[in-house]
Image (cartoon, rainbow, N blue to C red):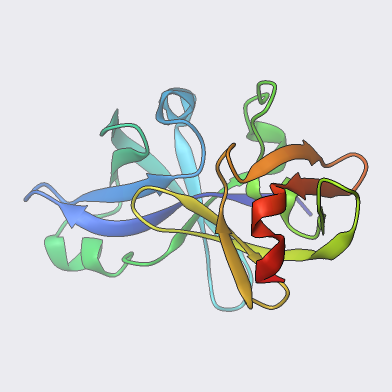
Length: 167
């Protein structure tokens, strides 16, 4: 069975042409070569959808039009859905870029090496990605001022000491 990873989330419809506005977890320029995306059914199966149209929309967004979506009503059924891609189809990441699945489960350490918790999951809003730590009791933006070092191969990341009192 193929491993799939989340590459975005449908945030809204866009315009009157059944386009979907996707918060992109990959840089929008990386989406250009994608011809097919997948959505997960309730039973756990992944269903492929061919893209009719795709275009970047700002720094963190892409607009997609699925061939199978023929009405605005069809488009609204995708709101809130996660967009998947098989892991082997992911573009190679650059230095200091990470996929969500690489960050989930990492130990969170202080600059002094003290273990503060674990990244349970990641969430995002329109502009930013957040690390949810210790069952969501601590949520910090994933920005270089707060997350100083990321070592997925070693199983941890280091946060700014100024954030320690949150734990």
